[in-house]
Amino acid sequence: MVIAWHDTTTGSPDDLDHQRLYAIARGDTSAFTALFEAHAVALVSAANRLVHDVNVAEEVVQDVFLSIWRAGASLRVKGSVRGYLYIAVRNSAIKWLRHRGVEQRWLESQHFPIEEERADDPAMLFEASDMDRRVRDAIDRLSPQAREILLLRWSEQMTYAEIATALGLAVKTVENHIGRALKVLRRLLAEDRPDWG
Amino acid sequence: MTSSDSSVLPSDVLDRYLAGGASRVERDMVARWVAASPERASWLRAITTQSRTVARTPDLDPLAMTARLQARLAAEVRRPAFADSEVHTARTPTRSPGRVPGIGTRGLARMRVNSWIVAATLCVVTGGVFWLARGWSAATSTREFVTRTGEQTTLRLVDGTRVVLGPSSRLWYSNTNTRDVTLDHGVAYFDVVHDPAHPFIVHAADAVAEELGTAFSVSASTRDTTVRVVVANGRVMVRPANAMRTAGVLLSRGDLGEVHPVGDAESRVTRRRVDLAVALAWVEGRLVFDRTPMRDVLAALEARYDVSFTVSDSSLLSERVSGPFQGDALHDILAQLAAVSDLDVTQSGTRVVLSRTKRPSARP
Image 1 (cartoon, chains in turn cyan, green):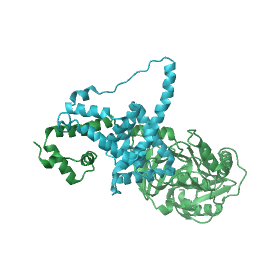
Image 2: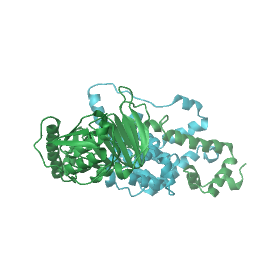
Image 3: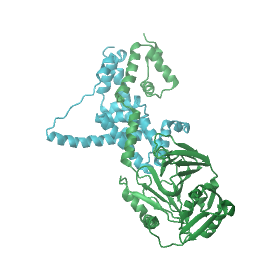
Image 4: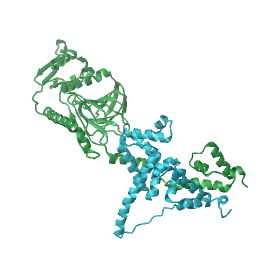
């Protein structure tokens, strides 16, 4: 199915996604599956960064896709489909967090112990080089918004416009965050560290 | 240590490189800049791997996730594949005058007809409202379509599939998210709107016919349990219902597939070529036979006319009948049948008795 899609397309990945949406509106389940497969890992990861629970993250993404399926022809996506998917997943994850906040306050009022989870992969830390650890620490110390922008840019390789759509920011804001993040990361290099010369 | 051309790397070039959007010239710039210092190399590698590690949750299985999404789509959405089909009845005029039904199965058939007419009317009047009210509900209900003797009707299912339901036939399905229909008895012609994700499957007696983009007819005789599938277009997979393991027989245009019951063992499927003009003549309301066994001819006539046949000699049932039958009146048809098959035909009311023509030479 996916191969057939590529055969009929010469455009960018986003043109491909728009074609898929068009097919989904007409009830094409294979286009629906293809759209999900193309973005599932990145979207579930993005949701997981917000909800810190892989199962919940997957459910959040599923909800978004099922609502796309139900919307059918009434769904209009003007810009980047990927940007649209991110913003939908983010909104859905935030809604879940708010809902859970309500539940959690109720649980706390009932004096249930809330388990605090720390999802650090020990194996990963063990294998990481000194530079890896410093880069990771620097990324961790960025503001959540700056970190998200940086990840969408360098890991998901989105354009500034796509990131702006996905996070509801101005393109200029995205650009500024990237510039500042690079400056921070460059300071990890001896040559760019002002105090070490 | 660093040469002047590699010591300065603009941040925007670095950004485009990391985002996979750098030009060839820019990639060369980055390569030269990295080559000048081992620390730069480990720094760039760390950014690439760490941004990816932080960005991607480990151990996500895309295939498993897709399977779970599909399961939810099937279980949760549960849009009935042809919820509340429209019924466009294009009834051919009843060939026999509406007699007072007798007792037994014919009376039953009439009762079904009445309920079907009511159902069809109801659907035409309230169809749209009905569909909206149902929404995504998972409620399962059964829809049935019954034609009486001499009646033929055309149905349009919501999935777009056109069905010509021949005389004395009963077709039903449950409103689920699959496209499974069952032909209890009679004959039906399906012009299917293909959807690879939702195969259109016809169950009939001991057979299962799955369309693969196609138009075909299925007939389930009441006289024997052989199910016949004729393919007008595309391909159909026919398999015995009791043998899910058997791959079945793939039929294409012009093929007749017959599923024969063989005791308790798995049914046998045979395939042969047929003349489509003959095999699908009934769709246009014509009676045409081509070396058709007498039992099927009689079943076809019983479906059209309010009569029941009795044969004096059961071997008659296996004899073959060929040729187009002209005219609509029952007595014309019976006269032609008598002529082509060398039979004596005796009709009294709704009973017709067939016997071999007694010839002086036939008896020693």
